[in-house]
Image (cartoon, rainbow, N blue to C red; front, top):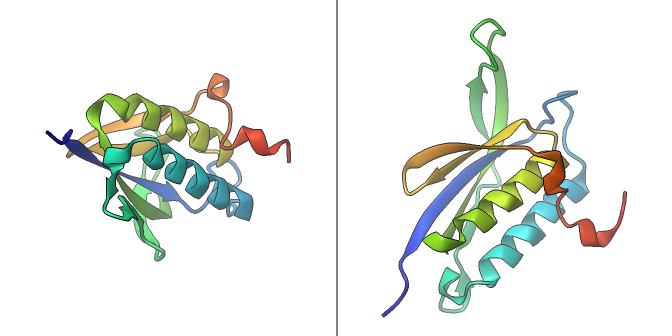
Length: 135
């Protein structure tokens, strides 16, 4: 019997939280490399010869408030979708913590089969694709 997969989606803002500047190109490359690596570790995350990993090249507008008194911050994000076995969700959360550290985000919005959570950055999680060396 095939192991059921859960659909996960998450937007990645195109600007860093701290200075509101675009991410370095290597950050997008590292994110793509790590997502592909995550999905490929689980053969059930494949659909025939195609990996179950999609993203939007176009950006989607959004907005958020850090606190009730901070005012509205508008941003744009790229949205990603992947499918994983449910028991591998913690691996996805760990990867998103590294992504948050790499792209200077306080947290990343994650939807797992329609249930939303915020994956917060943690310095001890490290950064994306650390094996490529310091930049």
